[in-house]
Amino acid sequence: MRRALLVLAVVLLVAGTLLAGCLTKTENRPPTAVFSASSNAVNAGQQVIFDAGNSTDRDGKIIRYNWDFGDSAQDMGVSVIHGYASGGNYTVTLTVTDNEGKKDRANMTVHVNEYPKARLDCSAREAKVLAPVAFSAQNSSDPDGRVVSCLWDFGDGINTTGMHVSHAFSDIGTFTVNLTVTDDFGARSSNSMEVTVVLRNFTVSWSQVPGSIPQISDHSQENTTVNKTVSLGAPNMTVVSFRMTWRDDIPHWILGAFNDDFGLNVVDPDNNTQSLKDLAGNITLNFSLADAPSPFTLSARTEADARALVGDKYAKDIGVGDWLVSVVLGEAGGAQEITGTDLDTGNNWKLDVSYFQYEMVVTES
Image (cartoon, rainbow, N blue to C red; front, side):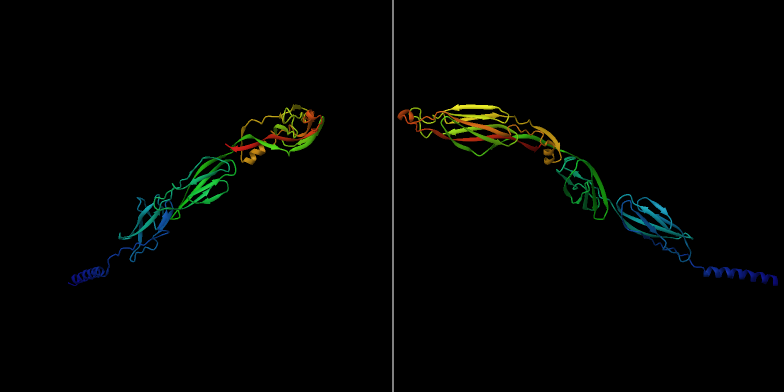
C-alpha cells in the first residue's frame, strides 16, 4: 500500500511540473524589420547601401535577412549594396526571419534618375580657320526630366555654355568638341565630335589704278627747245602717257587756230624714245611698260597672311626714275604773213603726265 501511494505521489509531482510549465510559457513574437538606405534617390548605375542593422527580435534572434530590390534582383545579409541599371521607381522589400521562423517585412521606394542624352550638331564638320561655326545641343534630351545646362569644350582651350553657341577656331587642325549636358537631378552626360579646321582660300588678282603728277606748264619761243625732267616713283606701272596741249592766241589768217608747229620728245629711264610733231593743238605719247600679273589662288590663315606670302614677288620698278621731256617749237604762225610783222613769236603749253599701275587685290574664295 505504501508503495502504491509513493508511485502515485511521484506521478502527481511530474504531472504538476509539466502542467506548470505549460501554464507559464509565452507565444514567440515576430521580429521587427527596419532598414535604412544611403540614399533613396540616385542616378542609374549609382550604388545604394541598404542596412537592416536596426531590425530587432525581442524574444529571440534574427537569423535571416532577405532583400528584394524591385528589379528582379535579390540578396541576403544585414547590409547589402545594390545599383539600378535604369531609371524608375523601385520598391525595396526587406524580409527578416527569427530563430523560430517568424517573419516581418519593411518597404522603401527608391527613385532612380535616368541620365540625360547629349547630342551635338554643328554647321560644318570642316571649317575655315577664324570662320564662325554654329553648334547646337537642342537635340539633347532627358527621359525623366529636362536638360538644364550645356557645357561646351571646343578642344582648343576655350569653353562656353548655352544651348546654341558659336565658335571660331584660331588655328588649323582637328579638334574634339565635347558637349556635357546636366539634367534637373544633377546627372551629367557627354558626347563629342571632331571638327577639322583648314586654311582659307584666297584669290590674288590685280587692279589697274590711275595716277598722275601735277601739270607742267611753260612758254616756248619760236625755234627753241624747252627740256623738262619728270620724275616718276610709282611702282608697278603698266602705261605712262604724256599729253601736251596748247592754243594759238594769234590764229593764222588762212589756217585758223593751232598752227603752231610743236614737237614733243620723251625719253624714258631705259632710254626708249618717242617723238611726235603736230599743228592740231595736242600731242599724246603712250609708253606701254608691262602687263599686270595673272590671277592665282593660295591658302592662308588670314588676308594679311596671304598678302605676306605674296610679298613683293610681283613688284616691278619699270619706268621708275627720271623721264626727259623736250618740247620743241618751230614756227609759230600768225599775223606776220599779212602784215610782214611777226606778232606770234611763241606760245604757252601744258603737259599732263598720267599713268596706270597695278595693285594687288586679295579676295576670299
